[in-house]
Length: 482
Image (cartoon, rainbow, N blue to C red; front, side, top):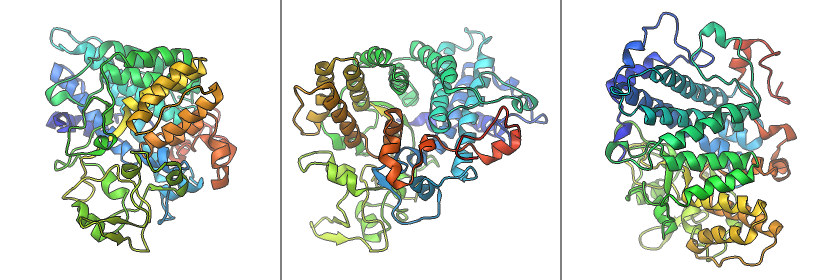
């Protein structure tokens, strides 16, 4: 169930009080009502955390533009004058609305979690009975926000406590390594020690010990700290997660999305104003297609599979059908092929197809991390640690589920390439590909034919923030975007 997304009146009040898009880190204006009175009871802190997820929902509605369209497995076929097309063609500028909104979203999360952590520190544990859990949850969310920020923008301001508006203007950019070592890693470590192994009832969907440990493993892998990545990801394999037997069940939204392979999603729910856009966004604009699948509205023609990705799937790969629809059309209930209009996108993913009544009100979640990803990351870490035979055991678990034969006797270099390939096939359209290319040093060689320049492993800082701080000595634009 996803009841924890049904925000209370108090959560909404917190959201309104703590939001200010004109400020550097979403700071409370001097004239705002004090929120001290809202941080007293266990429920107060729980509601404050719940409100923070609203921002995550908003941010991840367009995360595919960063993780998928930016890379080589997805492209913007039709519209050529929006953030999606600019990211696809490597012409994103610092004034792009996506850049500004993403920056503000992540710093809203950071501001809110900093506020929660500062208030809960001295809270009476007999009153705030879930104090440790809430600390873990706040640190998870803060680490999560900073991890995305440094992967998108590189050096960014590191703020770990509430600050005044005046102070914020003097905070410069901190190095990526400092943010990893001083915030992201310590926060995830503390979160995995404080968060429960699972939730029940209305709390299902909040981050768990497994989610914190899995994302910490991803952090270590991104840093090329393969020793810590191996040991951390090995912990996850002892937490009771299992691959679903049928890959397609991952994307069957008539079933519970919190299954044995689920680790952490951005949660959406239809019918209460908390739905996702993915069903509409990723489909061609075809009335017969929408009628066949029972989808309201129209297709937004985004995040289309490239021919390169289509050609990578072998005919016996059980993942192909759900990952990529039939090119140029679909088969109806009578097995007749129905062509798509020539004016719409001709390729599409079926991973987010679910019946919906209202446009952009899908119950399809965004999968931040699932167990197959953990297995492939572990395989990568083991291989880099010269344990190739062990690495293949985890790689082959994923391949077996896909109906493919396992690998044996590979060299370290061959295994590395096979793992990279398997991640493309397994995790397509889940916001992973671009970040895999960057962290493995293959982004420029892969994407140069599409317009990438060497400095474009990060995006430009928002022009609004450059102008607001107006001090290049502490807040310079990323090189190449000046």
